[in-house]
Image (cartoon, rainbow, N blue to C red):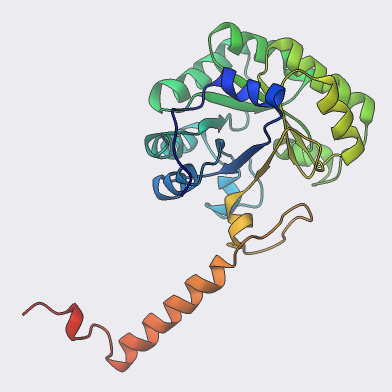
Length: 266
């Protein structure tokens, strides 16, 4: 277990880039997982709208609601003592006008112990980013592949329009975002964007030259039920471990081996 320190703040997170400290970020959706990741020294935890797919079983991130993400964020925030915790603004909460976006993001900060929100968008969301920041709400932006725009983009595809990616990244920084997720873009473009910005870039399918990386925890642990993106590295096969344990339990119950004498009260 990594030694815990005081809670990472937004300025400290930004300072990681200046210090050349690579940032490890993972998703979490409940208290036990968040506590384990925090104990491992993970610098940032994302309560992602990916829960729509990996927890709720939907095909896209679109169905998850603000109330649902707050429910999960409250559990995660209560578990974390070290990491910076960022919460996704679910679709379409950041597309309803600046004042509504502030209301929605404000609920997240008021009702959880989380410190920042993340929204998908760059230049098209610069007014919302600026409004949130002006209201005292730290914002992480997200450009490249934007899962909330999956229908408009025609699927989960690598985004190769370098000019637009650069423009979105610059607009997000200029609007006040403290960090930027780069998803599914060519490594060379991600390297250029990272070098051009003062704020940290967090890559997912964007190569090794970003200031940090993020993965969905279910993908990292092998708890998947379908397609696994190319950019994922599976660090464990927890799915097999769980299924093996559950199978052994079922067999022990069927054979009358569980509970045994050591599980009985006398």
